[in-house]
Amino acid sequence: MFTGLVEAVGTIVSVSRRGDVTVFRVGSPFAGELKRGESVAVSGVCTTVTECDGVSFAVELTGETMSVSRFSFVTAGERVNLERALPADGRLDGHFVAGHVDGTALVMSLRRGRHAAELWLNLPPELTRYVVRKGSLCVDGVSLTVAAVEGNACSAAVIPETLARTTLGTLAAGKRVNVETDLIARYVEKLMGLEAPRGSSEASGTLTREKLVQMGW
Image (cartoon, rainbow, N blue to C red; front, side, top):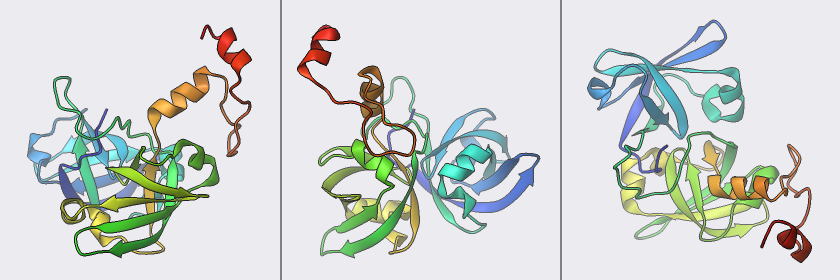
């Protein structure tokens, strides 16, 4: 479990294939503190450390992760947001982030103001149902609060601290980012029998008074 509060920005040192997995070696300021088997969110993707040499660590991504995330486009030299797993006694300063990316969003714009920036994203239609104004959205591993939702597009305000300490400050129109929607919303939808068919933006049912009564409410 993560919080979406980035600890450091690392750099992809190399990308290679090992059987049916893709191996990414990541240079990190805290690589010397890592142990094999630990979890690290790399730009929002939960990964497991398989090797560590003190200045960098290696992780392996499966075909499923490569297909739903932007890591199929990541090359050596690219900067990535890093966060270690939340300890049981740690402070949850962001929001619940599983590191299980739902898909990618297209950056429409990053409009810089005097004191902050407004980030607009175009989301896959099947994910917009989980995005609400004032709700949480994880973008490339960064916890953001949704400011507005318009169709398949949504916006979030990004403060200078976040722009300076994460890769969000380098975003531009046309780039893709990993997104993870609200985990709690997905569980509620599943438990209430409202889960949408795969690839659809529409619910399989609607919430009615009768359904609430049947469920004990």
